Length: 505
Image (cartoon, rainbow, N blue to C red; front, side, top):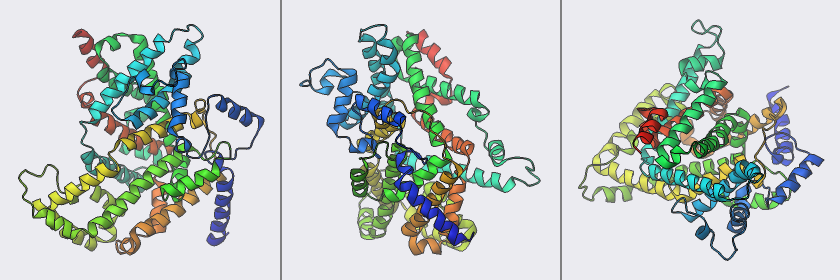
């Protein structure tokens, strides 16, 4: 079959699955069987509304109704929600999404068994108070994290190391260096992670990580209650960390996520599609649509900022004339690791060494104190305007809720893996979207840099074909987030920290 005919067949399949099977979940057909109807009826019992964006079509009133029904069913509707419940953060939108998630956790993991042995709601209240304390402590620690450095330096460095290790492993497979190794084994030998030696290692590693977080955010009286500590640990590890790592490491999930970028070009387009699609039960999976929305927002913001900076020479020059009385707190933007990362992704030093050297020379003026300080301030303003805001936290909480409880229904069961044809369709669609994205964002500049959209899109997709390698990346990012937020874990173990806390009481 020629490549043209093959591509036409795949495009026809993409169209078919977009209209049918992909709209039903995660890339596999879902017919309206008796089981599905029963499941939908069970969801309606909890006032859920299935949709492709799930929480996006919810209004605050429906979310508040869910919270009241589960957590404070006997409280009058005239009483304000947060007069009856403690506020975990200082932001109402974040609190609303936080309680929506917690209410479903309480329904699934506490009320499901505790209501059979007691009608006393004090235990539920105590669990909620523990979770509120944990959230407040985490929020306090996140306020101390330098997110600008994290996003512009630390995270790109981890991603760059992952890409370099993947390429190194791929170059050594089936050579004299690694003659009998698979790509997974080769990658693990180059970048071993203690959590991925075997399945038990992964469970133990996530348990230690969750335990470390708990002993640092809870005070001594709460830590002394082994029941509450164990329950909180199970919620954090089993419900949170394990589910996220396992589901987001599937290659077909990532392919479908990328494939839906073309459906999330703007918030208005998303809302328009939602209004026409929410009539069908079990529409597009919320995890991939919401992540696509967030990723597209970040990409479009970055693109707009690049254009803005190219048109703002006068603005930067005027700012550079102002007297700088203090030493620049951060390194110049052009010295940040995010630029070498993109350079390595595009393989610029290898494809266009002269252009790469020229860009390095042209970047020198932007390292001077006045200009660099002006650019840093503008970058910081944009990050805080578009990303480092409470609505981002609310969006992630909403996303997390829809990963675990689609449509506010029961805890999501393990999903059926799409067959080979469906995965091929997902991959072809993702490649088409990436090619269009590369050509659209970079245009002629991308071609000057030696970029070839089709080849680069294929190379990006190949990096995500292995679940084990994807887990390496996710766990590396998770390690980074935990260490940035809880630096004590770099030098001590959770057990030692717990002993010290209890001994000082």
